[in-house]
Length: 307
Length: 259
Image 1: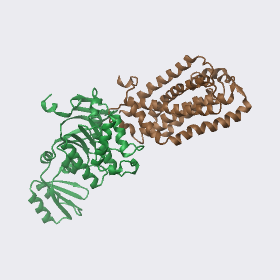
Image 2 (image 1 turned 60 degrees about the horizontal axis):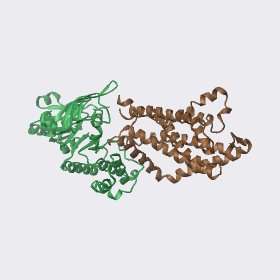
Image 3 (image 1 turned 30 degrees about the horizontal axis):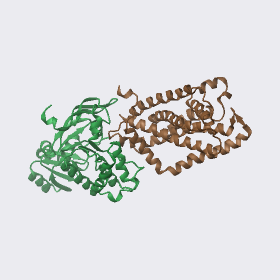
Image 4 (image 1 turned 120 degrees about the horizontal axis):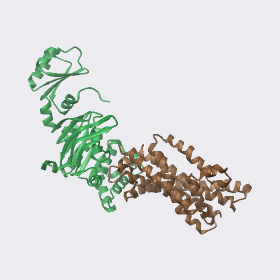
């Protein structure tokens, strides 16, 4: 094991998961170093959640090696979970209890002592700004509040590794920004964070390093900036609301371009050329911007819709 | 193979038990009303009403006969309901187990915690009927208190097959099969309403393979204060049935929850 792997919180090699004939995860390998925010990106059904479930020992793997905190998940599942917090994709707060009781109950599954839990509950609730709702039932909370409470619940055992499965899906911008700032804070505290997301803006903001998976395979790996530099030109001209055929031949000489619905995307490292094209062609709406992770993602996984 | 080994009892199971107990405590008034009110009405209506025509059975007033049968039946019924409807609710719509399985608790803790909880609910309801029966003068001996652990055991015994059904269930309607094919026949045939000695010969053999028969056979004499005939045989039958079902339930619930 290399020194780098020794410092890694999660280390998996050639991870495989089959459900009957379906191969949901097909030989994925990656390392999550201690203290970073690591992203797993991919279209719906790419195998992100299945990968997370295997990492937590909630789903036995069909093949490969998997270590968390340097221990095999099969033999050390209990010790690993004791140090891990999870925010699942779907809310599974306990509707039979209040906000504060949910945290207390969760602490009891970790067999934390009563005093520790009672001390942590107000700290965690004030961190996610739910202290005023401590005695309210779960049913009275909004979607954003539930998500924040789930995050607080995941921290009840003061975990070293925090796993967030699509933490901001379905949230309004305010709630999303709040979750982002919490993730930053948790990272500053020295926790390792593993997250999946569909939102490229979120991945660019939060992740130090990420992998992109598609159909159970790993197709790219690196920091957001490195991935953009590696897979995309620096600039893109987005032309929306096309009303006539583009001069495809003329375009192809100067730019790499993609067509999607009534929009065209022209990629180039030469921003002047893109702006000149926009000026000379007077197209419906042309928007020039720097390329981002979304362009990389769409280039690598294609523009077709997923199941 | 880990997935086929018998379930282990660990302290985390008590956390699962405690979760259910705390939810129950919140709705305790309604629950106790049901546990005390229903048997009171049944016993007064059927026990006294029908008892006047029946007179004595097996040397005891029909009211006493019925009350002791009801205790066993209630233990079965309450544990079955809890292990099917309530467990399914926690497993599927509420996803409570999914949340628990993200902690150091394991499927075995859920299985054992739920079994213990079902047994506890049976204990409450069976003891409530015993108390009602005592107040109405149907209990004649302190040996009736010995029935209480048997009520708990009966609850455990019937919670286990309930979990098996739940492990297969895709909707609440699935439980109707088990209710109609297994629970209702036991309610009618296993000696709750009349002695099994009045059944036709072959049926008497058949009911020996139904666990409620053995629960009634222990609980009734204890309530009345009579010696329990073939105590170890009946107890052994209950323990054997419960143990096998709990083992199978653990295997099936693991398969359902860990995929």
